[in-house]
Image (cartoon, rainbow, N blue to C red; front, side, top):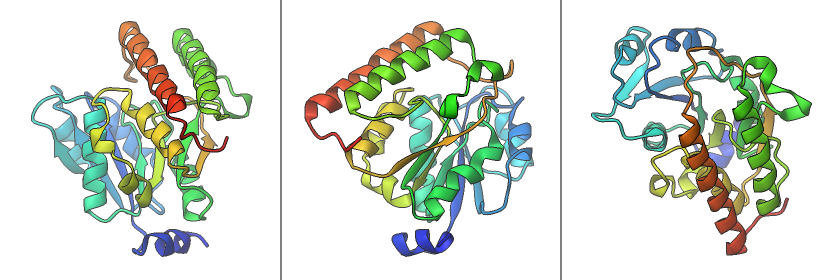
Length: 250
């Protein structure tokens, strides 16, 4: 099946776009791009959220297609621009890759494969799959335990069995993004939870892919207070989904 599966489903020629929501990525962007396998990738799009450093200049020098927000709008708002622009250029598969090197660029082909083969509508990289311990890759303890506890609670609310529900490395069939009202989601970090939960409610086929954990001193990270705010909002999103009674099959 391969690319033909996606092409037939979408009615378009296969076109894979990797989008990178960037903020202060000057010190990690080049390494991210250099580590990204190019086979099967047709376009690289970076959306800069008004970084005060040299992210945009570096991205242009690396030959990336660049969009820039005139003012900082937030992580969710950045993804909205990423997906809107990718769809406008005709993407049949859209891959989300953070340019801070927190996620392994070499895992992109593994995320795309289940979609190209027709086995999945959406995939995301899990750092906990197959019993992996992300702390060995540098994940801080507070994020490790926070991720595990909230994932367990959210799985119970949704009736799902994901090993991680807070991964920022994802891939989508065009039809998923066209079906979900992502432009109405939060401009903050809980955008990720809204999109995943909504995809589940729409009964799209969501597949986890095991990925390694990459944490360096340059990797972006939100504060503990913002992490707690994100956790509360994410649990609220899952609780609201449970109350709606529209949950998909586990």
